[in-house]
Length: 401
Image 1 (cartoon, rainbow, N blue to C red):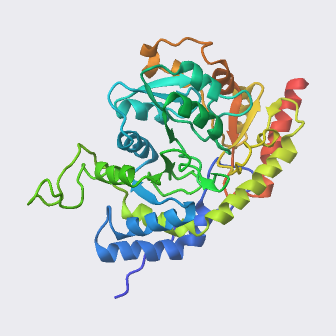
Image 2: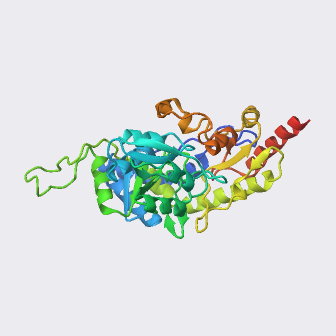
Image 3: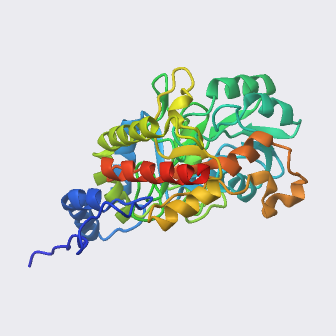
């Protein structure tokens, strides 16, 4: 008897123009369901649900799309960062410079890999790490620098690389948000020794759970990462250890990508270019509506990408006066937002032992007080964007009154 998987159920009440969720991929998922279903059935027929043929197929497809020589699928973007740091040779106690303004995983991955995070401030215009701050905080113990590509553009990689060359640092990239971003044709994650991608559901290419990947052109780094994701097992017999099949060559972890996630990602990869284009259209609509609104201090279109770097909008971020009041107003109107980020990393409790105080990285602290992300995903409609903008205008009009 032929087996079938049922498609996800459509909302019984239909869409309404009033609620605007921060993220929703239900329309895309229904459209792609035949391909997702077929891929999932292939996984079930093979009976290999982790680290199997579907993962390898997705790795090859993603390598073609990004231009990477090596793609290593893992179970989250955070694990990809930890494995990248370890595979690149970070030793216990060595320092890695990271921005003070980013998601906590950037710095916690350094700790989990045995290193010490050293914070640097962000640029005056934009949210990437400031190369001048990198230069200022580097010490003789600093081994690596890990810029983060945030929201819609690359960090200043040319500036970071100049400092790194002068100081003898390895450049790794937290490119978790940066699929599709390129600098003069080179994809994010391939501008240094290696980088990562996150496939958290809300990402530009999202799974239906956690998943991630490591990108690199370095064959040895990729081989080490493949071993690390699978309990440190090499996957082949080594001459130095005759008779030991699949020897454990390094203490590793269990960070293999699941084949069901690969099945979903492989189907969604075919729509990635269209999704990126739609995100750009929606972001431009926000820019047009919000530019000049009293209370909105900055919109993404006001800051050009670094020369040679293309813009891919993962998050549409604005800086807003009375940000928390605006967030509450939008929530009451049924509009979802995300605050990026409530507290800079150097002031988080888990890093209190590093001894930082308010004022150490003023640009990062200022961004944390003003930045808010608005709904942005390919299933968003023009009417929903207009509704968000109408509510923002109403909020600031009410404040002025």
